[in-house]
Length: 597
Ligand code: FEO
Image (cartoon, rainbow, N blue to C red):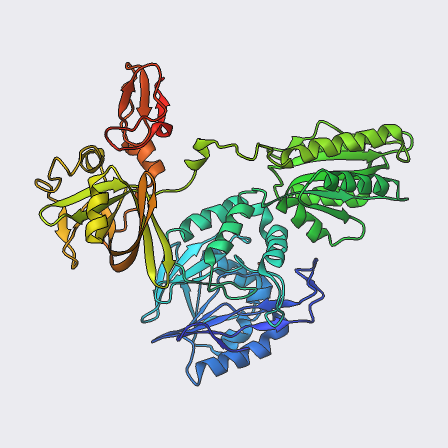
């Protein structure tokens, strides 16, 4: 298959629908894709080779992509044979090519291809670079993701991350299926043990401007990259992705299964959002492992067998522990007709796993469910479902602190009354549409700016950055433009094309606006504005309300008794704060005050 990824990067990989078990163990009902890419520049680089079953198809794809040119480099990011099996065939076809790898790569090439003679090799270091012309590749080593020689390559020209096995999935590219499920089964099965190493490479990736991810399996990712990176972050940090209970069980004559089905029913009856069952003797074991890593709770139910647990459960526990299974709640159900001991043995097998919480309630079935074991199942269902219980509150309950969780930035809104520039601090700027670009700005009626903007219909918004010191908040927030000229001695402002000032320091951008409508909100007016100009000024992150509270606002003077304004730090001294109290500095109400001490 030949496909354009960018103007100068071509996909030259192949689909495989004949593979019976990928890596000798994973069923792949929708086949596999072995990806390889060609970068066409002053120099031509081929990114990885391909599985031996598709060598000829791949060489034809390369020849088409090259259109008569010769490849200058073969970059070998990963030596596992599903990618590197065709290195010898490629070098034989293009003997002048320079094979690019790291020191470990070349050791493995020697092992896999003892008869291969390479005329030209280039050994790269971690973060070493290779210029192809416009494209420059930077190599980031990703040891144990999931072999020791693995490296990823970043192309700064097209902003492409060639991610080796990272961000890959099971499934050929001519089958349309959701990414998450088969990518998760692939990741947990193949890379799951190496979460720490994946976290390390994600930290490197976070420093790069990545627009496209080209993995060695699965589709090229071009949109919504945050979604895939977020999932990789969850998986590699062993954080549960979804709420729900997985019940992995074995059952010889159906009695343990009866108990499992009862537990499933009791869990669902109690509102558990998802209950997934795996009969370990019949399920795809990789799917059962994947689900244990996906959900936050796991029930293990098995019979005592040869003074151990039933063999499929033993295998399952091995597969979990060898992948560093951790951070979950685990419950145990055992069945035994004369000496049930499976619960104890399962716990022992999980003893070295980190941060597992064992449920208090356990189930012991003596041959078949009876009144006693049925009660144990119900008690376990109660315990496991408790954390999913819906939040119950009165219909009109209002906890004002819940509103503090809304994310806010902080802004200086500037205006001009015809004779004087003015500016104030607000946290109430929101983009409301993008076609056309419109924002809402809400201002307290007691602020002079509200009057001025209502009359003139024009304003500028300077988005404060984390560099803004407390004095900016004092300057624009703690005094009124009715009494002072806030820009008289202020050195960090320029005029935009609408004639209003914006802050050219302590702000990372400014937006010029024309008001198109005003909504009276009793205490405030909401101005809906067309954006007429918006300009970035710096890369410094936006000052959020939370950042301001934690890092900028001075701590209150604790020797005073009373209430402190959480917005500006003003202290009201007294035993009781009047309900209708308004902060004289920032004009926020009593709900924004908290007791001192
Ligand atoms: Fe796709 Fe690690 O091989």
